[in-house]
Image 1 (cartoon, rainbow, N blue to C red):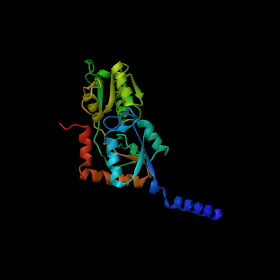
Image 2: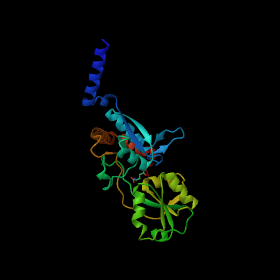
Image 3: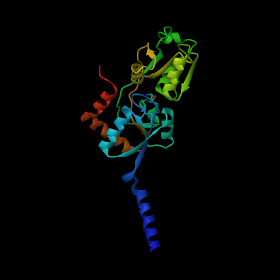
Amino acid sequence: MKKTLALIMALAMMVCLFAGCADGGEKYIIATDTAFPPFEIPGEDGSMSGIDMDILAAIAEDQGFEYEIQPLGFDAALAALEAKQCDGVIAGASITEERLKTYDFSEPYYDSGVVMAIKANNEEIKGYEDLAGKTVAAKRGTEGATFAESIKEKYAIADIVLFDESPMMYEAVKSGNAVACFEDYPVMGYGIANGNGLKMVTEKEQGSSYGFAVLKGENAELLKMFNEGLKNIKENGKYQEIIDKYISAE
Ligand code: GLN
């Protein structure tokens, strides 16, 4: 009797492996940034809110899948995806040509672009020309870091210091360890509006739109659900409701 039961269980497990029973009760692991307001807003209790979180929640509800959020940091989240330690990343991640070699992205869900920010009371830096011989800050693995790198030689920037978290990068500028930092426009705009002590003096650079990422060739069903859910929440007004909740329309 016991043997039969064990056999049945073993068989059931094998069937599950092949048929992908995991799908039924599977919880996708979605990695994200630790702080990227208004896309990732960490709460004091360790919870995470923000546009990305609400969009994902709305899409998951629309498509009927379950997930768990892991706030790892931006660079760490993409590394976790590459190491297959998570199923997807939503972290204001820009859809770049370079990344498309490694990841599959959803349809774009928000437009961005990189901008330089300096300390609010800094009257010395008026443009990139004034960065000569100075140290600037950027966030590891981001479009902002790539942009800083791209102008380093031209404007004779002395050094680019890299941080893993946006708030640490802002702090470096405020403390004077760096004269400027490079951040996504919607994030810096939100930060300044909420009194982060910085200001912008240059125009926004052309940047890529945000997308939800999975590892190339993996989790195609999750990506499909994300895209379908995104389409649905755009159609039913939920998407706009989320944006309006965090970014006040002019
Ligand atoms: N959008 C930027 C990028 O993808 C930064 C994302 C982030 O810092 N969370 O590089």
